[in-house]
Image (cartoon, rainbow, N blue to C red):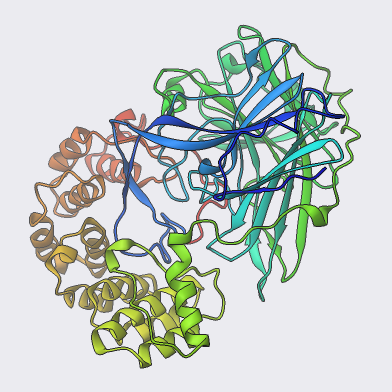
Length: 599
């Protein structure tokens, strides 16, 4: 028996048939549900190309709304007599719930709301459940709709979620499956590069679990890399924390060596836990993340409506998150991991990879582009080019719809569109052409193309590329050539223009002040950071300190602009840098990890 359901095409309940025959109790159900969701504010219309706080061609975000709105999501449940697992294709295909039926308890961290936390790559991370990241840590589409397929074969149900990602055009699929009597969830991940060039990637499977001071860490002995406010290595058996109460600041632990490839987390007060096991030859990665029980514990409640903390346990094919591999053209990668919900502590030395027989790797579906609105205009443009049809209209600038760098070979297509369009349309196509070229890593040609257009948004991208090359005067000239008033005052332009002016030197102080005065009433955090920097550069240090400490910043991971401002102020006032004020809203992690593409 083989049943195939393709995401976006159907929405029915799949209990009939799946719970019958030789698979008693094994069933799969689809449904929709409303969840309170905190909306995000896009960073702006300047594409995230060569942006250290983004990943092209995805939109980055600058704020999370404080008040949520109801939003509908699709869910799929997969269950047998032992466990019930819920997945959400509308949240990047993540597992949102895992109930261990013998105890009737939820194992995973399940926030009651969708409340994004500020963290790279797009500043919209949502804690909870089990997510698979690709091609970088914290997947760019963890809160976006992906495609899915449900199948049953040989008495086993498979739910596969995935897409063709926009950054490099690589395909990823995560297959979750369950057999009739199994007390664990099998996760198989498949990556494929259909392109003509090799592309970098990393991947981790990240499970979030509810935590308390008594949460116990059941990890193997070995040499461990500790990533907190300082980098260090330790012997886990002699120096590692036993439980959550032993950790005083947010810390990530990566196992360099270990005597078994199984690990888990268990909380006695909740009576729940989760274990993970995999074949070390293909999935040796092992990580524990905790915010600890000190001041940093407040960070662990940013994705929930209540003050309920969590910890994360992670596995994957790479040993730590400072490393990227490269997937070559037409190369396929696959690895399998197993998640075991429990109501008691297990012996990790006895946990072995289950003897599960899965369908052939060739049967795992690989998907195309998942969200039609992101690719339709570019597919239509390619189609018109191939058929020598009329050139379609380019997308409006305000749509933030940029040509995917994962679509190879668009150069001739753009050149055809530019040549066969009216002047105003041709200018916009040049903007998209130059942006796509930069997104593919070719900044020199991007500068050449963008220099040929008078479209304001193209000038803003050109200015960024020039500044990154060290040509700050050229960047300022490009900014000054922007004629659209709305764009001149957009926070993206205000911030990046001020950085270019500052790089030129003190001779630009008056010009910087003149521009910042024009947005003096805005409460945009990034603009306020530039105002603090200007006050420092003008020698008004006390005013800079007062302003910095008065801003109600949202917490944000992996950016340290405010901390740097604080250090400048302390050094000029000859005051100690530490402690760093908590209201700055930045973490204190040491620099580690390949989270940014561009610095």
